[in-house]
Length: 92
Image (cartoon, rainbow, N blue to C red; front, side, top):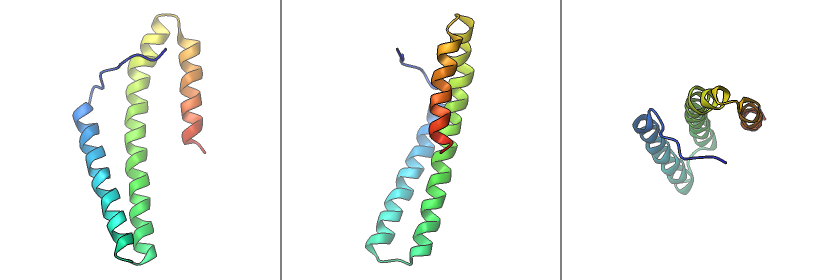
């Protein structure tokens, strides 16, 4: 069962997510203002890249923290299965 985890770079992650939140509001405003579709799509692409970067950081933190602990405690197989399930979601 998952437990609460202290993120090692929580402040940086929150900063990135706040920036992404602002970008989402900007895209919504662009749509409201009937802006050119390609300009909006470029912003959506930037948002996807920004979210991917957050996901990668979280995945890295998980691997170095939770996974490492699980392997040391003998629960490595279950942790690896869980990790692979998450990785498959991002590989679509």
